[in-house]
Amino acid sequence: MIEFLSLKDVNATHADELKAACSRVIDSGWYVQGKELEQFELDFAKACGVKFCFGVANGLDALTLTLRAWKILGKLSAGDEVIVPANTYIASILAVTENGLKPVLVEPDESLNISPVLIKAAIGPKTKAIIPVHLYGQLADMPAIMSIAKEHGLLVLEDSAQAHGASRDMKTAGSWGHAAGFSFYPGKNLGALGDAGAITTDDAELAQVVKALRNYGSHEKYKNTYQGVNSRLDEIQAAMLSVKLKYLSEDIQKRREIAAMYMSGINNELIQLPIDKYISALTLKSHVWHLFVVRSDNRDALQQHLAKSGVQTLIHYPIPPHKQQAYEDWNDLSFPFTEQIHNQVLSLPIGPTLSLEDAAKVISACNSFNGNG
Image (tube, rainbow, N blue to C red; front, top):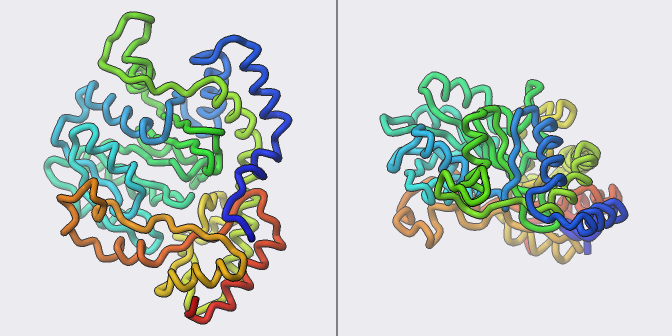
């Protein structure tokens, strides 16, 4: 069986360095908010091209705490509207509702990322922010989105959970908006060995607030400026991430090589390949291929066929947020393209340890699909 992604193999590649980093933390006797976190924050900020980075417990907290900080700073208020993609993982929306803000769902364009044209149409008098999601590792159309935001005085919070290292026009994911949230969930292009996340920004005022919010609302021990939370990236995960950050560009290049094979090799009218809005992505460092997602009207049969051919696949994601029980008040809303996407998408194996031989087998299995499982 060709695994979708073997985290064991991914981490085995750097096993000696990861174990040494872990031992270094254990021997230090300092496990929360120490030198490992400080160094990773500096290195990741530099990698993203921003002034500030703050490690938090996970990607959802990164989004939630940034919106909360903007409320504290008076830039957002309860009931304000935040434009979010209808086609996204639910975390993008949970962060909005957790802060008493109102999500306004917007359909994607053919790139499967949020449509700038529809963003503009959705702006109303209560709109205060936009959360573009760089889905599957492809940047949303940030030049257009930032232009719209500037025209209407809106905040932009990038959901960069799937886009570590993606860039366009010499600007990296995490540096386009007024702030960004990252996830380092183990399966991400830059993955920890547990839950982890980060906030990036160039805004010094915002940085001071989120730095305190993640630590009980405190800048100084036992003095609490805000009603904060405990959302701190621990020393061991920071040390793990520092090791893996050194190899991020190399890992992305391997993903691009496999994606290029898939794009040129899969030739089946029953399978729609990803539409890369910036088609030069394979050479111009835009798409980082966190996921390689195809579409098919016979998705379930395709998945069965690939399983029989020894290829493991996953579905990202089977149910759109507005059809989830968690948001049952939205269940009657209609977002036809989003709903179509969620019924069609299938993620093929891709990752830095997938061999080119196995990638060729995936291509062969896709090309032999005739519509039957």
